[in-house]
Length: 113
Length: 113
Image (cartoon, rainbow over all chains, first blue to last red):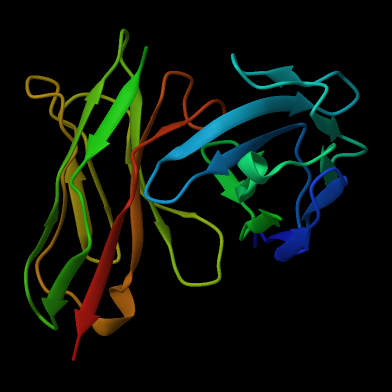
């Protein structure tokens, strides 16, 4: 149980375009979910916390107009990187809040050229 | 703010060797502590947790003890297997684990036959 999918797993895009990353919980429902970002040899950094039906809460230093979060339902959330630039290249991971732990997706690697 | 420091990798061991991955933390309150494991191509999975001082978390032969006096939560396994090859993340949460997590940088473990 507690399977989370992310799509796409890999994306390469041109600078200035927007990229949408989808995160689904396949066999459970959760109200709260999280988006993380991971740079090479760095820890996962929380970008934002999102509750279904509410606006996301962004961590300090994360641009909410650049990283748009749509928490559509108890099983689906999307992260859109708008007007992507090379510095947005990273590994993005979603996590759903369970009772005692979070359940994570396998991650999406974004490369902006 | 809260932070987690874990030993730099990568760590390479032979099968049946003893494993220790060090983790220390800084937190203002009394956090819950976690070890997550990420196998190749998969999302992070909870390996074990401890919610108060002197608690020992254990799972799949791995153990870690919550040491408040040394602010540590070192991961140990007496005899590693090739299937233990993965990236291990130490993390803390002030809110029980289903909420915001602060991660260490991760330690990549490779076990050779």
